[in-house]
Image 1 (cartoon, helix red, strand yellow):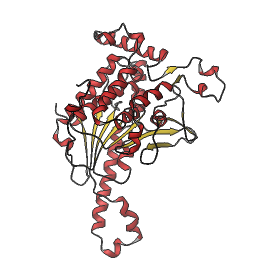
Image 2: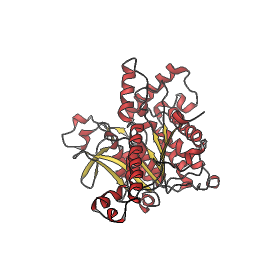
Image 3: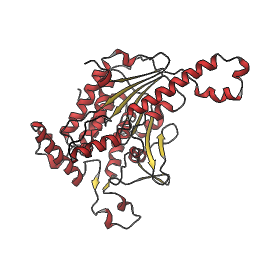
Image 4: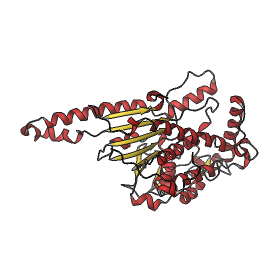
Length: 390
């Protein structure tokens, strides 16, 4: 795994049999370093996305990728993740001295201590606790609605992301958020919006930790409140294209039956934020099979039937586009527990990054991953755990 990518070592973009390569990044707080590791492996393999879409921490990673030159993306991801895991409180610990706590129990205690530090003092360049508790502010004040302030994240984004580059449209960029007033899910997309740091921050403003972000007179919270992955937005948005989508999830829908209250809390959060990736993909397969069948049926209709209003109504839903959905899901260690999404130690960050990098490398060893699917469905899914042979 490269710590910094040198421009002269960048691999030329690989020629793939798809019209669009999409990178789809789920929310999951501190676990998001896994996505940075995945991207590093893709970049080393010459796979550069045409479209990045994210929710919450996935929105931040997406902005860093879309808002930098290809040769700078991994380095800027590394800068961001090193900054937010630079905890002065933990200077004396293994996180900064490279000495990992031995055994699951010691590591669990270390992680819990690190998570507690984040609760008490925040994360450098990301968020910080308010000087006065929310209930000490008058109703209606922004400070009365959250425990932390995120002005530090805004300045960090302005340093590591070139928003002019995002808005130039060389790469499509989408982030999901929820309108607090209407409860509607909204995608901020550089094909329809001028993207600013506030759009990225809105996607990650999970209440009651973070305040809602005001954009054009409306207020927005974390998109993960409704849907923690933007896969449906990518595959359903028009115009439809042959698409290779790398879906990088940070929560696994599958897990063990909890044996105590701590494990209940962990499993509850995993189920809540996993977004049922496989169920959504199975539904998309079914819809795409119907689209293929409809395209075949319409092609066999005589001209007089093809010109009917019914046929014209159905025609936009028919297509023969192909989709390959590559699922990479972070599978946490037993010692991580329910606080893993706000445990911002350098040690855990590096572990998450390495896990994403190696999962992507192992996935790309399977040649079918990068091949255009054929057949009636026109959809192929690949999950290293389920489909891999390693």
